[in-house]
Image (cartoon, rainbow, N blue to C red):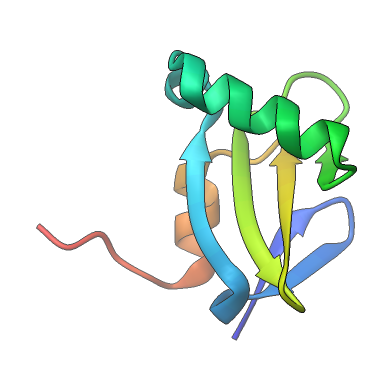
Length: 86
């Protein structure tokens, strides 16, 4: 199955390692350091016009990619057809 992340970018759901809310994920200094490292390595793909609402960590071909999307985590979850276990 595939998931549309915005801006005409589609990824295979098997390559998705995690989907994170930017409002809460960027509070941690470890997360900010990880994002900076990914950006310096050229592994960040911005898919937004204003502010990103979510980030999607994928591994494609053995290489990590961090997509920054203007779509919320709830929208991405709905599009994926998955549910959150209770």
